[in-house]
Each structure stands twice: as C-alpha cells, then as structure tokens.
Length: 106
Image (cartoon, rainbow, N blue to C red; front, side, top):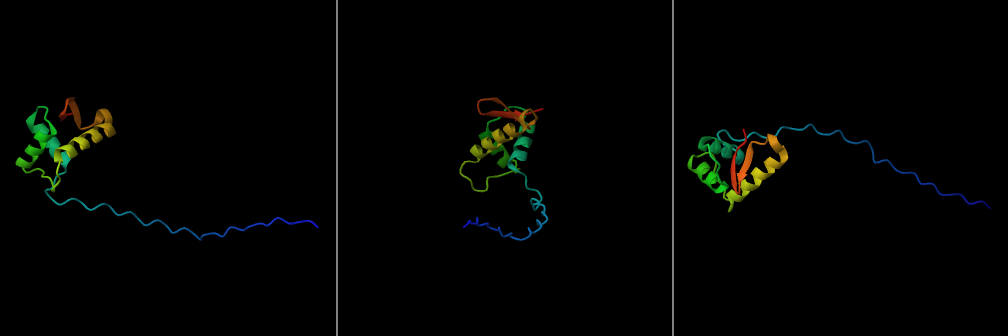
C-alpha cells in the first residue's frame, strides 16, 4: 500500500483593509515657539557662542520659551542640539564651537 502525503491548505486571512488616510498633526498654539527655534533666536540676538544654560535663561527672560516643568531643560536642549547636528550634518542650524558652547551655523 502506498501512503499519501498529507497536504495542508493555508487559509487566507482575508483581504487587507485599506490604510486610513493620514491626518496632519495639529498645529502648535499661536505664539508658542519650540525650544530649538527659541535657541536659534537667542543665539542670533547674542551674536556669540553660548552654553545651553545661558540660552535657557535668555529664552525664559525674553519670553520665547520656558520649561514646561522639566528638571533639566539645559540638558534637554544640549541633547536636542547634538541630535539636530548629527541628523543634518553640515546643513544643521547650530554648530558646536567649544566645549558646551554653540553658535548658529551660517
């Protein structure tokens, strides 16, 4: 007697649903500025290299941006600046000129 191999039939899971259309992200509230935009504005006004702590103080003093309650806004800004420079390379808005000091990249 010959033995037959069992064949399995895969069940289809049905047709895929069409992807839902993407909706754009909600716009920021009028008059609010991002931390990086505020840092660029402060550096442009200063015209000299600044540390992130100096930038955060100036941003708050001039009303451009204030920390929403974070404990280390200068460390957050430092990380954001480095990430932006790494992502955009020579086309980044900022440039590190000394240890802990940044300036606008022109």
